[in-house]
Image (cartoon, rainbow, N blue to C red; front, side, top):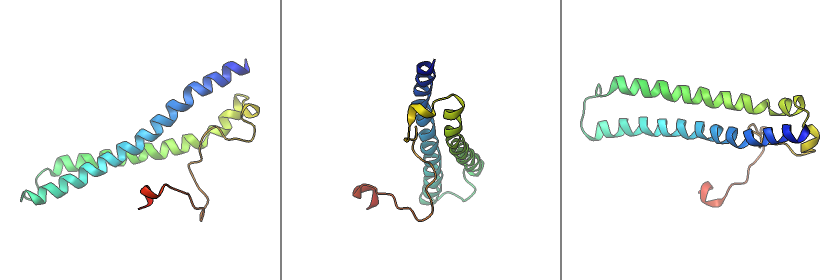
Length: 117
């Protein structure tokens, strides 16, 4: 029984993490698209009103992406309770089954130099 619960958790975890990461990509892609639309409109000498309705919809979509991201953060924070609810706390021991989403204020994170530059 414990092995089946652990297998079920292990089957869902990478899918959850992939979906979580895709919300970041979707928000970033929408923001990039919005910025590029504004840049090329000016570069092309088009009036400020060109594409306004479409731009409005993209801003709404970006807002939905950010809301989805917040929902994933909230769902992610529920993982420890789920692990306990399904009786897997001993299966993980002292390790947490997924990375933290919130870092304490003042905590530094090491990143590769290429990213920091």
